Every structure is written in C-alpha cells, then in structure tokens.
Image (cartoon, rainbow, N blue to C red):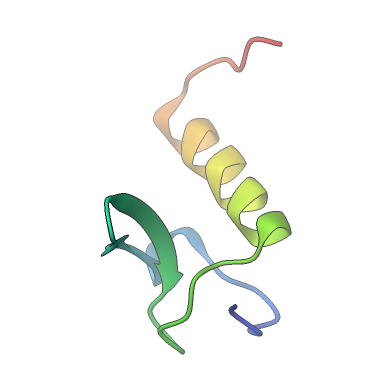
Length: 54
C-alpha cells in the first residue's frame, strides 16, 4: 500500500492486478490505500466536471 503523504491526480497510473484495475502511485509504485483511492476518485470526478449524485 502507498505510504506517500499526498498523491495528486497526475501522479496516479492504473495497473492490472489479475483481472482488476488498481490505481497505483507513480512515485513508489504501490497501490493506493482506501482513503487515497476515495480522494483520487473525488478529484477525478471534479476535474471531469460531473456532478456527483448520492
């Protein structure tokens, strides 16, 4: 799991882990943690300009 303090939108790449696509940090190469992945998905939705429905 990634131990980086802050991961920005452009520092994430996607890799396959078996048949699952996993967001990984470009700095350290490890998969993002749950909190980091949630924050990344929120930033991604915001950058796309999509209103998040709940």
